[in-house]
Length: 234
Image 1: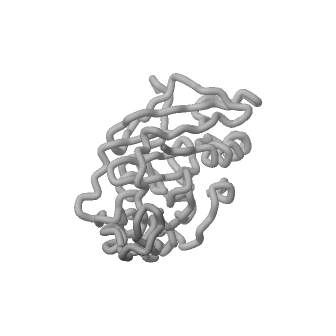
Image 2 (image 1 turned 30 degrees about the vertical axis):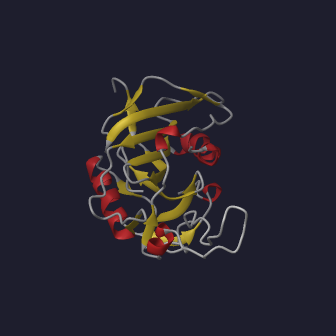
Image 3 (image 1 turned 120 degrees about the vertical axis):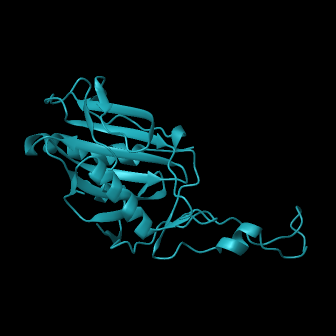
């Protein structure tokens, strides 16, 4: 799997669901060369609190990480507590119960699901936001919170193998909650989905929209854009 270099907004990737976190079941049932959004760099100029002509200094973080964006071969991890994420239920959907992540890929913190009510369609056609903790990049993440895109590929490849899925599109760089993220369409035996992966140092937010056939896709996929665009963190 590769992640294409094209930077796109969440609204442009409705047709895209990365090689994966797990897809849900009923309970009981860039090439990686993108340019992620630069992390906030702060003010590199010193001086006293009154704005005087004190000595110019460079904060330690900027000395180490620099003021620019990560290189084309890196993903900037979100420096946020993804457990604080909030989002809105799209029009025509309602929060649903009776679902669970049948094969969590990390430590499951929370999972939210919503089904369409207008029109109502069979179960397993849902939108969802799943938050994981316990993610460990080992020594792949540097002190600036950046990981090689090759490592992201490998991580997502493990997720895909774990749920026996295949990519249906090239993965692409995008944004979720104003942070660099990845999107891709994924296929499994019983359903397909378009997914969005937002990584931090030790957490993962996975938003995805799942359909069982093309008629259900016409209802589910359009809801993915407003869902993803509504996500805020912190």
